[in-house]
Image (cartoon, rainbow, N blue to C red; front, top):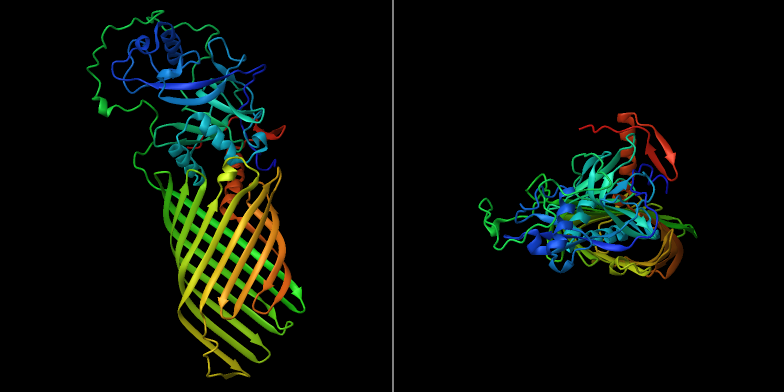
Length: 545
């Protein structure tokens, strides 16, 4: 999918050789802590050197309660309060432990291990050490485009950078941007409520941890502790007095903070479009179109994300019956408030209370009829995706959906040879409107997903039908197409049918990324040269804001 990854300035760290796994860990300083008292004299030297080099602290004797210290791999983890990135050690690092990010467009996370984007992101976020709440918050921010653009430049410093190695997400820590000056990395920046900052390199899915520090000169091969730092910080007999510190209850981690403290809701839009066709048979045919849309304002809750908003459902249908002599058409439009719940463990529920109207017309020879029914009722969908979240390919996801409408009023009329018929009792009969369905993803292949669906429709007392479909969709399930059979349960008929569906919001996000890239090209005059499967800018992009 070269069109999907047209512009990527991604992460490949010019590393060669074996990589032994360690963990990138952090410790939050407590009131009265000293490095040597907390970690021991020998480990304190390593902690001191690493955090001075990362500019987390300036003086190893003057650490403040609430600060976060990054721990080197050789420090015992029994004092750790937050575990973070799983990072391979690398022989390509300098002796100071700084990893040079030198190559653009080499090892994107896009398609890593031949997996979908969501699974790759989940692995990266777990290895970064995000809590379930932070992962859910970030997932909502990604889906609702709650980000700002960031331009990385050579000399930027990062806590860790992700890339794909052997089909798995791996991290290099203490990274220095060392690419050529005519290449600029464009990323989307997400600031979580906890203050953690993550950057997503456009289109290639690489994650960068931590806000870039100001550009600095490349460190020498040998790094010595800053002047005034002893080889072994002394152990304090008693905790030093920290007169300028606030009460312990008010201490907060010294981490980057969001630009806005107020937590406005994150918008979660949804839009699905589909059509069903029943080709001509014995003069009869049928076509229908369906649209479901919603917009939710979401917020975090215990174990998942809640959303309140407004939803819409619409259906349009037409066709011929009675060997083609009778023609019918109709539509159903319904609006109403909605609620959604997205559970952290992979399932979600959506419900709406809809008020709507059905309008139907029928004509055959000189006979014509029409009726309008106002309805009220619920629409519910339940998505069970836990198996897909666990990486299982067989029966990875199940979706259940339905709508039930009861009439609040019925208006009907008919005529023959232009003369109105007074008796409308039979035409005015309307019991309920019921639509049910089960959509089962059967198997996730490398390049497509096999799915099956069963649908049931009843408009009592005049129509009752079922349809069966089996089909395929793209691996990201933006669009799918299926074929099968339609059954007329009221008149004991059957016919072949086919249909398609698309997730408009998901598809729009892909198109929007491509369109924004072209805008950048137009606004900045950047030209592109192809580099393998990537398009790399041949001169820097200057921020427009």
